[in-house]
Every structure is written in structure tokens, then in C-alpha cells.
Length: 432
Image 1 (cartoon, rainbow, N blue to C red):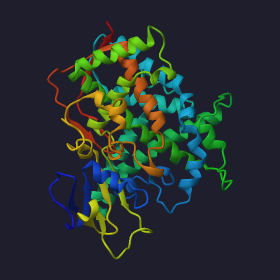
Image 2 (cartoon, helix red, strand yellow; image 1 turned 120 degrees about the vertical axis):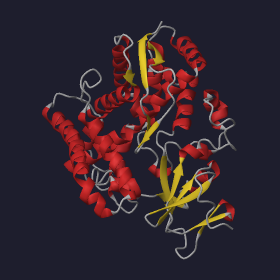
Image 3 (cartoon, rainbow, N blue to C red; image 1 turned 90 degrees about the vertical axis):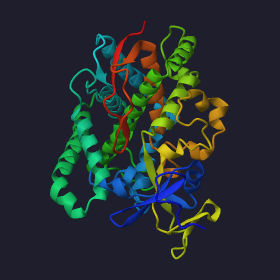
Image 4 (cartoon, one colour; image 1 turned 30 degrees about the horizontal axis):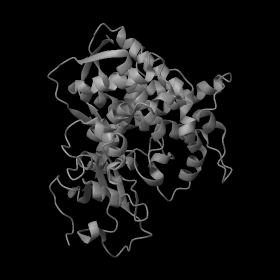
């Protein structure tokens, strides 16, 4: 039996030590599936997820298992993100995506940053769909929330690797300023809704402001509402990173563009895209899944042994006893490794949307399909995210032709809570 396999960042499991603390990384599908067993393991709220709590103290995203407000908030908000509830947001999502492609068609091929443009689209869609407010930041100046959110999450990622006094002395002021800007965005949306009583939308913000937890009868106070509004925005910020990777992989694989357009044209037949038609575009869905696999736009999430089901005096065994870890050991599932596991994915670096369609996708091990998380802490907005991703990809392919501003561009990443392409610029024009 091995205490842990390796200190080298390869293989299905390895470890590093930061500031004297051991961190274990999971990089294979089988072990990913094992540590996602909800009976033995749970979400670990530590590291960057804990560090961002000052921005969203009571949000579900960074709640500890012992905190009752997770259940209270979830019971209030969950009915708004079921598949049927999300379908009512399709028209707003399509409106925003079409606004972006209209802007691109009028750009005369001027190079633009893919991630900057898609960040604007994401912020516009999220604010309109969930909070009922049109920011107009697709065509005008970007919302300050985008920079505030990026700054907050970037700092939260770095803080665990520094001594506490260094964070406080050199970085706390900027961190606090970005948090204040993010909270101002949410507060402004809340004040806007209160000032416009004529807005008749039974959306997420309406629910946050008016609903009561069916179990406790409690409602959310203003600060709790703001926490969840910021949390939803941070959660959705992964989506534009994914679409940026979609565009990169499609431009590197033009045959995939041809196949996707054949499917789109056959299904739509010159009619408008509808929510019902999304399920009839499986190859486009495969493009999104394959881009998710390769990009790992949400690069990782963390797990820990459940204290109630593991003996605190004995190590936790993995892989049938092949490895053992301490009973309080946090583990980081690294999707760059899991999603390239050669025992599951043949030619893992290749972009092959077909392997993410139909029976080929369904037959994959469950550990290869955890990109949206797991168990009761699975991505809260995953149904909305999927609709947004497929709608955006289809709208772009339907409306515009794209090319790389620099045909020699090699994919580079910048990573905080999500991974985004760096210096990736595109040129767009009306589809020929």
C-alpha cells in the first residue's frame, strides 16, 4: 500500500506541499469517480473557496456543510433553475446572443478579444435573466462588475499560498475594494428593481426578495440577497471561458464548423432558433462538451472525507487500498488530468465532438462527466449554463463567419476560478 503515489504532477494521484501543508491532487477518471461518492466524501470548503467568503459570506457556493443557511437558500432558489424554469429564460438568452452577433457583423472584421466580448455577453445575460435589468454592456462600456469579479476571484486564488500577514499588509486593500465594487453591482440591481415596481417578472431576484423557505418560514435579508446575486455572477463567469475555447477549437478544426452548420441549417431550415430545437442539435452539444473536456474552464473542485463515515484515527483508503490519505485530507480534482485520462479517452488531446454525442457520451464512466460538480453541491445553475452555452454557439455559427486575428496563435491560459484564453483575438463578419 502506498501512502500517496507521487510528488510529480502526473498520473492519477500526486501531492505537493504549500506552506508546510500537504495537498493531494486527483488526475484520473476512476479516482475522480471514487472521491465523488457522496457517502464517503463531501465538498471541501477551503483554500480559494473559503478565501472568497468575505465577498459572499452566506452564499450557497462557499457554505460549510454545518451551516443551515445552505438549505434555506437552496429551497428558496432551486425552483428557479429547474429545466422547465430555465426554458422560460431562453428568449432573453437568445436576444443577448443575437445582440452580440449583430455587433460583430457590423465590426468590419476589426479584431476583438474573444474573452472580453463573451464576458460582456455573460454579464448581460445573467443580469437580464435573473435580475430583470438590461445593462447594455455588449455595445457600450463593460460593466464594472466584470473587472471587480475577476479581481476578487484572482486574489482569492492567490491568498492560500501566502502567509496571512502578507495578505493583510500588501493585498487586503485592493481585495476589499473589488469586493465593494461587486457588492455595489448587486445592490444597484436590487435598488433598480425596488424603484421599478412596473417590472412584472417572477424571476430569481423577485424570488430572493419575496419568497420564504418552506421549511423554516424564513426569508432572506438584504445582505443575503446580495451574497447570492454575486455568487450567481461568479458562477456564470465560467461560461464565457468555455465559449472562447469553443471558438478556438472550431477555428483550428474547420471541418467541425462545416458539420455543425449542416446540422443547424437542416434543423432550423431558415426558421428562428427555439428552445425546443436545442435538443435536435446533438453535434453542437457535442462541440460544447468536447470543449468543456479540453478546456476545463472550471479547472478543479475539492473534496474531503466525510468525518461521520471515516474513523478519525485511521487513514482513508483509495483505489481498493492502493493509496491511503490522512482522514482529514483535502483533495483537488484536476480536470486537466481527469479529462485527458488515456484509459478513457483515445487520443485525448484531439478535438473530437463525436465522442461527446449520443451513446458514445452516455457510455463514458461517471467520473468522466463531473465537470459541473457532484452530489448536492453540483453546479446550481447547470441547466441554465447548458442552455446558454448551446444557444450561444449555435447563434454564432448561424450568424457570423470567424477567423483568428493571428493565424499562428497558440492557446495560452490565465486561470483564477476559471481558465480563459489569453491574447486570443478573433475577426468576424456576416456569414457568407
